[in-house]
Length: 364
Image (cartoon, rainbow, N blue to C red; front, side, top):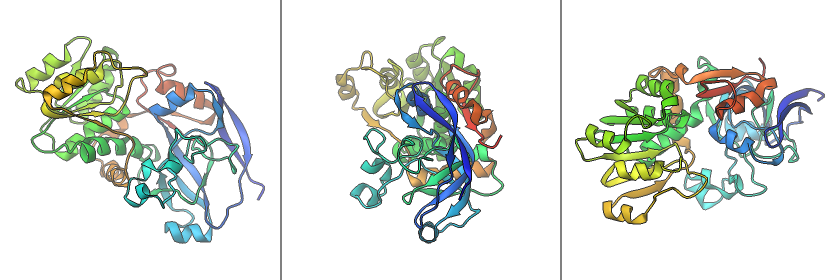
């Protein structure tokens, strides 16, 4: 097989160039995916700023099975031409976490562990090198986790399934949002907007979204997704606004997707006694003004959220294909392989303005 693959390869910090790789031979237990679209995650911007070994980034990947080994076809229940979305995780499938459905926490796919297997993170030095979606083709490891995607679903919408899956995981499965609940979401980025959708699907009575003045367009998207109230925290005090909306009691569930120095403290201040604070993003340093005594005084539960389960991604795909929400409002920018650097910088606020969810289309 002499086919060649073009891939945007990141090397060092903040540097990407197009490199050519051989399309690998497919072993019986693996496959090759022809990428249609790959979303750019907020975590990609964080990773882009670090000095890591050369790698092909991109883990929000949608495409069609291009080659598949006989063992893989039987194990995965897939055939060449099938359209799928991939999770970034490559779990072992054998440990207690995998066996209990928590495969996103499996040590084999723990991105913080050297030598982990994970799409968009594993370096090109690990054969066969094609580990990310900012490429024409991607290697499919035997431990890949797939979700089927209907043919009629636009690729860039299907590429929202992982961030939207995060929203369902944190808001519904972890936070138990539902009828009678009031929910505060700090940060109207792609993850925060996903939480809005999940809260509305779950039937929450009231959804409040906060952001900065520069987030005006994103806050308007939150309203289009069903948010009942939006708060510009540079113009209004968040706690006062929430107390006014909730009749003085505070919200039942507060989700911090912003991860700023003061947002965790604001979440605690806006949450009622016996309420729940979900921490989905953390600042680089200690949160200013955080005191555990305030958790004790309000009997507030603080819960960390990370990643998505298989169930949450399936829920996301269900509502992507349903057409219930104007998700096209989130898919703001599209770039080809030659502009991956600009795509990632745009997510970080240093490239094209107004980016919410950015998609890389390798064949453009």
